[in-house]
Amino acid sequence: MPTPILGFERPRLRAEQQLRISKLRKARLERIALDGLAMLSMCSVLTALIALRTAIHIWHLHA
Image (tube, rainbow, N blue to C red; front, top):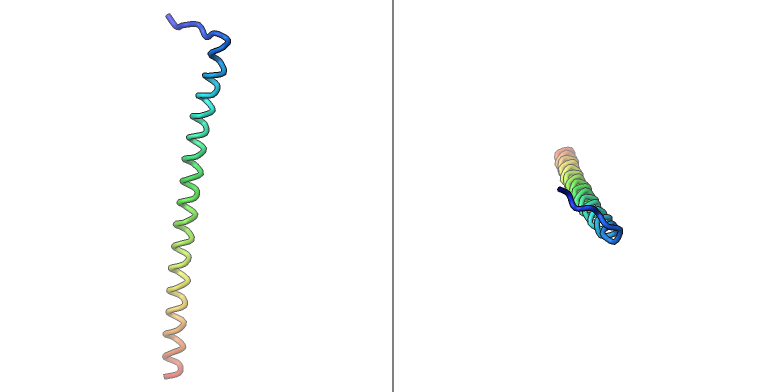
């Protein structure tokens, strides 16, 4: 038989629920931040490859 929820226990339950939501929100934000960092890394590598290709192309033109 479930124990009845008394009036003074409700704030504690609400606080625990908010803590769970807070943990989920934090995990979601961390995942978004890591995805953003990965995207910036990939863009940096792509930019470096384009610059290298351009430099090789210019070097061949002047050779």
